[in-house]
Image 1: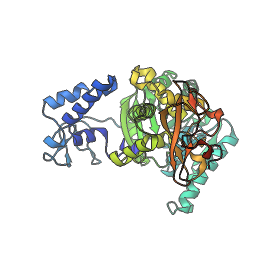
Image 2: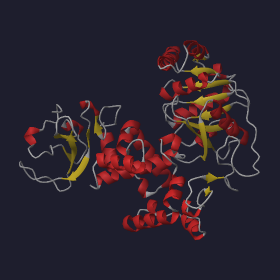
Image 3: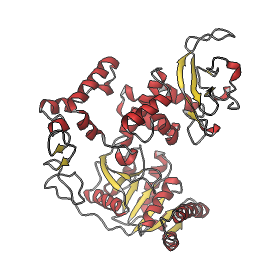
Image 4: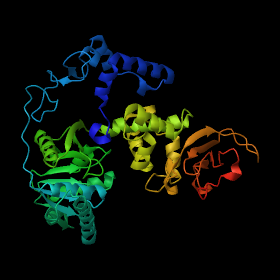
Length: 452
C-alpha cells in the first residue's frame, strides 16, 4: 500500500499506531450501526487484544517495537530482518534459487506493455516486443523513445544510454520470435479470453523452463496457467502504471506455481529496481482488494449525503496524509476501470459491501469516465475551475413538482468565478434518476453549458 498507493504507512502499521483495542471498538461500533459485514472486526484482532498485543502502546502488535510507545520496529521470530534489511520472511526458511533471465519477451503494445519493455531494457536486458503488426511494434517503440527523450531532457539519462536502451528492444510479429526468451510477460487487454489465447500460443513456442507471466490486475492467474501445459511456470507480475515510475510489483503465485518460478519473479523485480510483494491468486491481490472497497465506500458516502466530494477528498488527504482523495483517484484511474474491478471483487467474494455503488454505475453509463473523457466526479474541461460533486435530495422547483426519488447532483463553489456550477453540462450526459437543475439561489445566473 505504501509503494502502490503512496500511503505514508501500511494498514497493519497504522493499526499498531492507533492501537488494536481502539481499532476494534471503532469497527465494532461501525458494524452495529451499519450491519455491514465488511465493518465487522476480524477475529484475529480480538485474539491479539486478548493476548495483550495492542500495538505500539504495549511494544507488540502486528510488529514488535524496541520499547512500549516506541515507533522503532525490531525483528522478532515471525519477522526477522532479511538480507536487504527489510523485515519479513520466516526464520530457517530455505529459499529456492531462481532461473537465469537474459532475454525478455513482452506481448502487447499498450501503455503498460511499453512501460514494462522500457523498464527491462533500461536494466540491460534484451527485450523482444511482440505486436500484431510490424507498424504497431514500431509505433510502440516510438512511444518508448519519447519516454526516454523526456528522461534525457530532465538529465536522468544520457543520450548514449538512451540509444543503447532502444537498441536492446527488438520488434516482432510472430510468436515464434519469442522462442529464445527466458521470461515472457503478457500485457494485453484485460480480457480473459484474449489472455488465455496468448498463453496458449506462448505454450507452443516457448522453450522449456521459460517463465510465463501475466500482468493482470484482477483476473485469475490460474486461468492463464490452465491454458498451458506448464502451469508450474506461470506467475502473476502485476506492475503499476506508469511502470517506469511506480516501484511496486505484486508477485502472484497460483496453487500450481513452482517455488523457483516465484523466486525468479522476485529476483527479476529487484534486478530492475522494483519492490516485489507476494500474494495469493485471489481477486484484487493486495492493493486493489484494499483500495477499491474504500473507494466504493466513498461513493456510497457521497450518495448518502454525508459530505460532498471535495470535503471527503480533503478529509482523507489532511486527516490520513494520503496523496489524493478517493474521488480524485477514481478520476485518475478511470471510473470504468474502477467499476470493472469492483464487480470482480463482488463476483468473487459475494459480500454485499463490495457491490458497486449505483452512482458509479450511472456515471459510467453516462460516459463520465474521469480524466480520459474530461468528466468524472469532477469536470476537468473548465481549466482551473474544476467543479466537483455533491448529492442532495431534490426539492420542488418553480416550474413544477419533482419526483420524490429524483436526485439533484450539484457542485461546490467555483473559485475562479465565485458562483455555483451544475456538474452536468448537458441533459444528454445525465445519469438515470438525476436532475441537472442548477443549485444556485438564482438559477438564471448559472449557465452550466458554457461554464460561466
